[in-house]
Image (tube, rainbow, N blue to C red; front, side):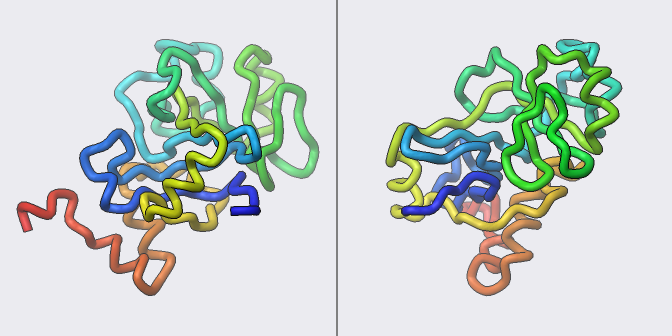
Length: 184
């Protein structure tokens, strides 16, 4: 694969059932010769952002909880924002389009007026060089375009089926794949 997947979605194939990535939707934050990094945008937890990062509570989007970003470094936090306009606010690194990663050491009051949405993730999903490409080649992931609101939906748990359904064709049929085929 010669193109960068930064800013795109990885949608877990049904073959990943029972794994950490079962029905995961991963927004790719970087993808280059050094590997790949993304966050699962459809895994809200019960932990309120205010309980772990109180200064960011006024900035985060509903439902105001920490999302599980992936299995790597669960004790670290990563902020994802949708930025207003074309300026790059202090403390934000643009990923693609309006999406950016925010340095959570930046004062929240500097970031708040510059963003229209924000999520906080515990951990991330990471791949070594060529590892992700191998998983895509073996059919573990579908690579699709992200819509600007995907990472900030209040109905994040339903994102896997929604993203597949909007693809049309064979991928749209995957959206109705049962969570547990043995119960079908």
